[in-house]
Image 1 (spheres, rainbow, N blue to C red):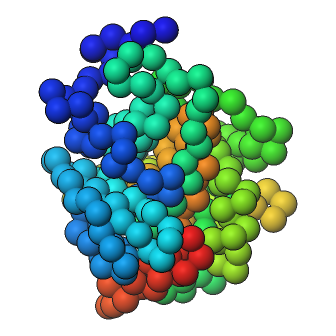
Image 2 (cartoon, helix red, strand yellow):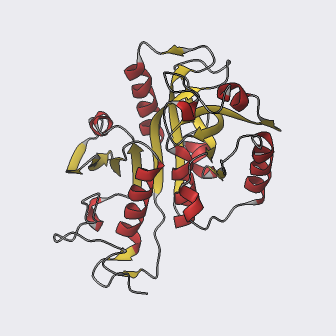
Image 3 (cartoon, rainbow, N blue to C red):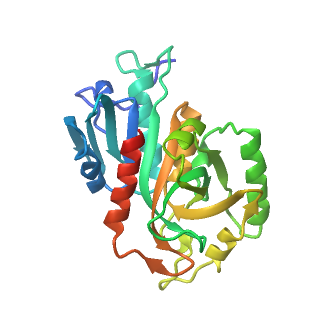
Length: 286
């Protein structure tokens, strides 16, 4: 199948539309961050940097840590941006830009998110580095994709749907982390289900001026339990990363720097130190 110019937009210089990258620009191991300033905070640890490119909120650095080639790319906030970044990363490795056809041999990327998050359980302190066992999406991204789920994913999602059945209008989706990445990079980290919200304020249970339609949202999250599975934290990208990575045949893990305790109404006074801790842990294991 030949992809149309409207479906796959390629810039005049041969780069993919939003990321502004050429196929040779990215490594097989990709670290994603939400904050564009965090790209440099990771690449400063590289032994060499071969490429720096940027367009809009999408900043990319590719270089070497020892003999390991790594790409770091900023996604911006939210699963709408994850949709752009993951489809374009996949296109860079799995579509021939000359013929506009899908390659016969597909490549699987290792993708690790290093991001920030808030804990919803009282026993998870600020400063914790947490690996997401599952990404639970309360956003609408996967309404537009056909998703293949495992038996375990179906079972946990059924329990989640039952627990949140009283909340109107949400259609949650669930995807597990890649087991190999979870066992290697996330091996001794705190673990749990990460909820991905479609916003930062009311969709994450915050109350400022606008009235929340879902009262006591945090307590509804932290009261969920299915065997050993519990909801541990909230953010805005993980579920989209896990779901699209699996749909496209890539491996993904989300590593969360816990900056806030949502049950204790606290926010860390040293957020940069916690993020740096997460970065170092990932780079040591990658």
